[in-house]
Length: 156
Length: 156
Length: 156
Length: 156
Image 1 (spheres, chains in turn purple, green, cyan, orange):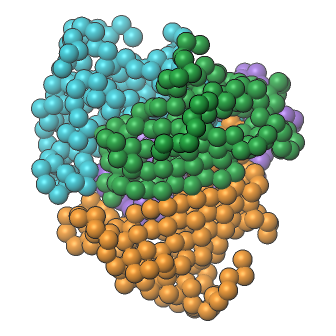
Image 2 (spheres, rainbow over the protein chains, first blue to last red):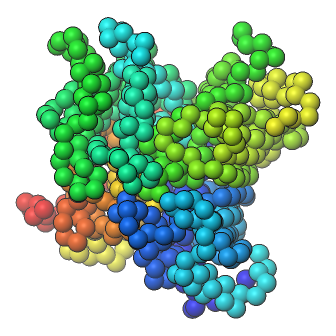
Image 3 (cartoon, rainbow over the protein chains, first blue to last red):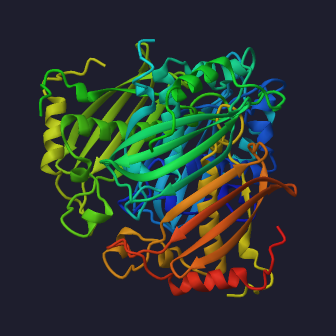
């Protein structure tokens, strides 16, 4: 993986597994992984310098200027090793623009350099009122470009 | 609506505990109880004959005719016995109007006639645009009246 | 068990979308779909006649006889249409045995005969103590057989 | 552990509200507040220097040395102002020992110095096998003492 630690810190995050993430089998209950992905994406946008209010609809915005929603159209995950409470997971985001209207993010979860889970989430840009496809907003486009710059062909 | 006011079936529901409700201690993770309460309230309104779309804001309504939101201003719960996966809980709702703008629901969870948890949730009516207090809607008022009719001193 | 094999009612469930399933965009927040899948699977096992306690680990069992866990190794979902509060979804489960140690369930969510989402969840049987692969338990095998009997080429 | 007892940084945390915490009314869906409380408590223990594995049961520990569980017996919350996506909340924990077997934590959520919510969570120590009351573990006792030292009359 060619990402250097200096440049793109906003794509390398940490997640500590909490008690409420587990189930009675003593490992994480699977769907929380997708919650972690979405929260990590939001944290990544934060750290890159984008405000949640610019990206996500809220009741305030909805009545006025908000012009793009980014619903998820596909997601998937593979669980490779058990994930337990207290585990300090390293999380790498690999965003990629698919076309003018959509992008995806691959999420790689590692525990002490060992992959424990991977996930993929695909978003599409729509007008929240009509729900018709629309172009990605400038700020998402900028974040995608900055995120993929110099990555080359991803070895992952 | 064919439900008679005497039976009040819409206030007596069942909830089966699912695997994802538990944590690594093998019993329910506490905050799911509040999710159950809210879902039970919605189910109660359904069974009484009210449509979710009349009661809860959605992105569609928000832009038009929707006039009352019912945010929760207080909630509390007591956990009396461990609740485990597969437990078939009987759930009784005891709604009560507090004043023109607010009401509360007490939730009693029993397992085989034994109380295992109780919860209380208080709602206030506001205008979703201004967030100022407003009166309860007619349909909520009607549900509250029907729910408390002839209850007298609560036997619970 | 009184359910006949032809009806397979235990594979056709209903799910009503609740307020807490939505996010500020006014539609379901994506990962709740996987919670619905797991809960539907548990409901399906219930209706078929299996006890949760036979299938899922709990702190009680873990110390004694419990011998198989069924962790999820892969899951994915496609979101085809917006899903909103109050929507009464028809949910069809299509289980399939993969090999001696694993099976998958496809979940098809319809609103008024229109597919709104599909999901796929793959489980593997392991010994919860060693986490080594093991054979599917007799009761899961029986449920899989009953579920796929006479299905032929899936019409969905 | 290098944290001095005066600073007590481990009791002053931050929480950023994420999209999945909201519902279709555009503000947080109430029960997530309790998830935040529990996660903040775990983070506080982390920062104080305690390992999750020492405090919380897991399937691994349960079969062996794990000797105390800390189930929640009571919780409550007041919601004072709407909480929205992107809000950067300051969170203060006020732990207090109640008796030999139990303690509580008050959680105060502020947005730009204004209280937006408060919560209270009460835990009791039990033996996870028998579920009988037992004394608080040494490490929890130590954390409680350090947390309340020199607090005097709470200024909050």
